[in-house]
Length: 319
Length: 260
Ligand SMILES: Cc1cc2nc3c(=O)[nH]c(=O)nc-3n(C[C@H](O)[C@H](O)[C@H](O)COP(=O)(O)OP(=O)(O)OC[C@H]3O[C@@H](n4cnc5c(N)ncnc54)[C@H](O)[C@@H]3O)c2cc1C
Ligand SMILES: Cc1cc2nc3c(=O)[nH]c(=O)nc-3n(C[C@H](O)[C@H](O)[C@H](O)COP(=O)(O)OP(=O)(O)OC[C@H]3O[C@@H](n4cnc5c(N)ncnc54)[C@H](O)[C@@H]3O)c2cc1C
Image 1 (cartoon, each protein chain N blue to C red):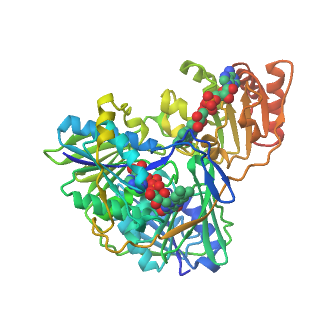
Image 2: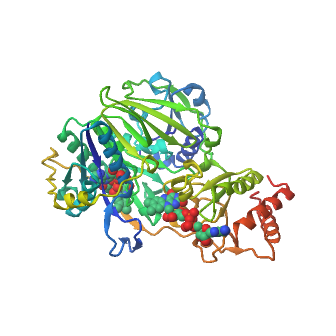
Image 3: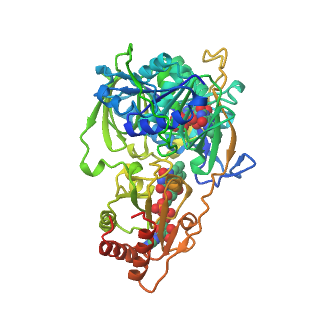
């Protein structure tokens, strides 16, 4: 392949994708990174050593809110300048809709939310969950240009492909943005990104009422972790904000530790915790499917186990 | 307002899906209107009820997809169109989006096109953005609230939730909007609606009818589908007399493992 272009609004995802690409430069070709929008010039510096041989920068005011239509146009032009035939994005919510738009712009095949990215016989192979996590489908993109949005946490780079990337100011002719984005100052409570969190305390319908969330929050605080939840708690009951929901329609997480409390373990939920290192499950039903993937299981009432665990952790001064 | 809603027919999420030898099977579970698309239909109907106009449901699929369209009609859509052509048999989202965009263009003078966030069979969630790009319209994705819709000024504003932030997107019409479940509570079809829908004749448009003389080839294939890899774990059950004892044992194990 002729080259890779990496882009995400999330700088740490860019570094991982660039570093992974550099490890596979033999097959994929040289690595370029695009840094767009506010402060792009400064942000570009951190990507010089991440494996990219070129870092394309553009700070045009039209890119300020990173509206997908303008970013998509910018990336199509940069891909051409960089002679990249593979565009790797991070499958954040924004990244997913950007990937599809860009693929249409380039008339290329598009894989959104890849959970596997690999190279077989010099070809890029991707895998994604389909049918609500019940299946994995493996895709081959047939067009010369390829757009893939990679689920955060899917790949890792060795960092050994680091080079002193050249910073290039990209000449772009950008369309007038047709949509305006106003970032809302979110409440501090709803600025979490559980996908990036190392310790999660995930609660399911085993929780009887919203007031009892306090127990879960106390345990999370003891662990210096974040509260997460299954779909019913956010979408049906509205007890927990939607960005804390794990699963096929929520976040895919790769924590060191996840405590899964009163969660049955349906596949639509568990696809989101496949990347976890250690899974602890507390459930009153010994046959709950969650125990099939847990490393540690406690058959019991979360209302007894959770406060006891918070105490035990406090005594040990964990976190 | 002239409103389109795009709907797909999919497997019922309540169905038990199994894969063996690369063949997906869901037994004799019925196919349904893609659950996420019910929210799109509802939002299209709410927009019409607030501002007047007409809602047309479009689906690309086989004859059977008319059932999904009938459900949209039963909920209250005014018209439905099935895009059906053997040329679309192996279509991927790139091809489907070209066909949907061509159909929207053929309908003419559309202000708003609603989509669900993703189809529950492929779970890709890419089609709406591709249709938007094809039409040259903005795509307001993952809308959890329509905050403003002004047909006079031809403007719309929606709210969307991203990881760790909330955004307000504002745009001129026409636009594509994809919706998430928080946006509304889809209505049940009324008895009258169901009767009307059951009698409705749904027109079919072929590739030629929508001006796609030559249907492009799919840009991607999915040659392998298999059951997700199982994590092989042996669950170590922690037992004890009282919660305190169990909690203490667990805390010690986690410390040993250095995950806390
Ligand atoms: C298209 C589609 C997409 C979906 N996407 C998602 C998704 O992204 N994320 C998601 O989470 N779900 C998703 N779901 C829903 C999913 O299928 C399950 O319904 C959901 O994950 C179940 O949540 P739960 O485990 O909290 O509840 P339940 O399945 O009701 O489980 C509750 C568990 O708590 C246990 N329990 C009860 N009381 C106690 C107690 N006192 N102490 C300890 N344990 C107790 C019970 O034994 C039970 O196992 C999706 C479904 C569909 C159809
Ligand atoms: C297991 C499996 C894996 C697949 N993998 C891919 C893949 O990786 N890439 C790819 O391009 N295609 C893939 N496909 C093909 C894809 O399902 C079809 O091309 C499909 O019609 C495109 O929509 P989608 O399912 O991707 O819809 P999504 O993009 O998930 O759907 C978003 C919204 O678009 C609208 N919509 C989608 N399809 C239609 C339709 N036919 N008619 C009217 N409105 C519609 C609905 O409003 C829907 O809510 C896969 C199919 C299967 C069964």
